[in-house]
Image: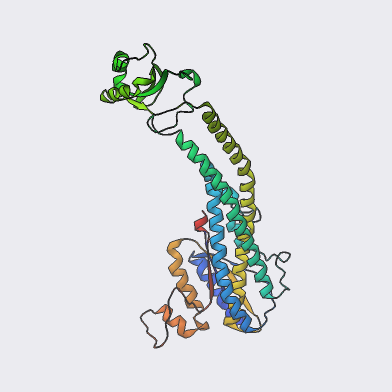
Length: 381
């Protein structure tokens, strides 16, 4: 499973024994894989400052998770036809995300533990804010380019009634610069090819004999040219409709066709040039954002452990990886049982939902007798 539970318990003898019992029970029952989660000793400051940091870290945690999910989605969107290989770019420090989490080590160079906690949090917050700003600008530019290209490509899709004809016809298909003659394009259903060949010259007066030519066809019909005098255009269109032939409105403009082709070539070139740098930026900064997110989790465990268990700082953090989703309920019961002594009232209410305690509102999902945080990587799969 791509899911982790990050918990902590006091570091005294009784609770270290409780952690050992937890490891024994979860191992024997094959409920989870457990490892110690090392968190450095930070400068605590005042309890008031920790309360403020607790709230700030909660918001930063949510923001960081949202950011890495958006970046993961951007990788998938940018890779398009190769999106099945997106996971190859969703790494942290060059390793897969699960390995990074299970072998987490605090980055002292990037986030010095000797600094005040508020400074460490501020550094991470500014880093993530800058990544988000860059993500918005880079993806916006690429998506605008991609949309413009898709709009041009859509013109070349569809049937003969709707698609652009500029990439199909050529100058030689038309009588151009004539004061009297004009070439029309007519869509003829496939079953009516023979009828068209027999009748097009007589649909109106002043149609040039043997002037029709099949330019292209799709599943439904073909695109034919026909040359006639300008004065009979409307009469020809009317007679054509009566015979289920459709005159496609089209004016051959060599300059406009050239402009469209050059625009398509330019957009394809620009997209190709931007693809590599954008994907590399996403790969590097996804890694940075993910690493920052796990550091935020570590900070949250530290702050909540101090607030929950008091001073001096003495707690042990453990990372649990449930083996399967179906074992999560049993694993939760084991943890609540092992650590119920940390908060007898809360633990009792959790273990026995039928017990109602006046004035105490507790939910299985928002309170546990131990510090608990969730890391879910499944949405990045």
